Amino acid sequence: MYNSFPEKLNSADLQNFKLVYEKLSTDDRLMTELESIINFSIPQFEQHLAEGKKIYDFIESKLNIYPIGIVPLHTDAGYLLLKNGDKNETVVFEYQITIFDQPTERYRAIGVQYVNSFEKTLRNTYENIKSDLLRYNKNLPNPATYVIESELTLPFEDTLLPLAKRTLVKYLH
Image (cartoon, rainbow, N blue to C red; front, side):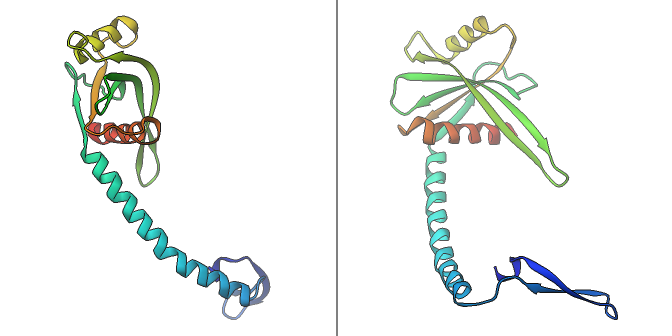
């Protein structure tokens, strides 16, 4: 951390072709205290991150994803149907996956927009919901449609939706 603090150019060593810098802050009691706080905090953060990953992996293992109907060649846009545990409601989102190219990696991002909610009944199946969506939106003639069912009833906005989006991206790519 000390090495990342700002420096001021002090002189130039022309024989060795080097610039000599001077630290703007000195290594005093404040720096020692900051270092001890950081050394204490890092293991605490690592422990909480490991615990959060266990919870995340557990919840992700309770999500089931599968397509509805014929899967089109282009799956970067379509519908996502979410069923939250024992709730009798299916929440529908339109999704769009975008790709960000970086020099070393490709990143995928997913954007979702709420469409509607449907009560799940014997007559109102996922296939019927997809048929209703086809009549509703003529811009997507054969949209990719996926269902994600959670075995657990979870907080929707804070847990299920973010995990469902990530699960869909992993499933598709």
